[in-house]
Image (cartoon, rainbow, N blue to C red; front, side, top):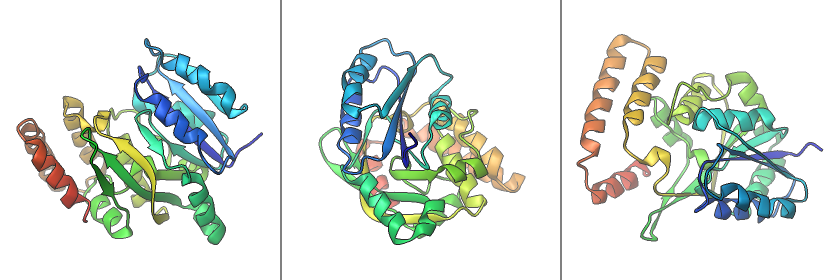
Length: 267
């Protein structure tokens, strides 16, 4: 039977964190959802944990475990297997607030036009030392970063109607780390509506793939600018900045990263 929400979790060797993710979906106060887990053929006991919790979902949990071609290939598999009207992606080191889906439903019931918009909320970022940082959401912040070809929404706290994926397309698998940013930029450029919810919907732990410096990060930045910049001059401007930033990242102390994140989230 078709559900209103489709929640998708992608994972690979995620035995240390996936139980928290699964529990957060199971704990939702609004239960008209299907839960799809896409595993990349894990070699640890990730799938043992998934199978342990499967009966508790009463048939709403579906899973597939097979090799994939990367993070966004796995996300696209989940989207293409889903049947819900609104799709949320909760990675295996993220977790939802217990009332996240209920908040979304309430926002849609108050204004049915929100059913055709991206729904996005606030997120708590959790450092390894136990401290947290609130990632807020607003149109001003979204526009500021989208115009600069950056991620202007909190992807773990963002839910996308199926109709928008049909209109804009799913994730571009040429990206290794930034296809979610590319997707949001495409939505902005296409004039897709966004509804901002000033409540915490999701949580993200430090140490995810997008938080680790790598050559993939630089390559994805350059690909993103190649794809979206309007002129060669604009591309070279952003590409030069990306190269300098990537080179410096390895020498930046942790206190500066925290300070920058705090400043970033005041935009």
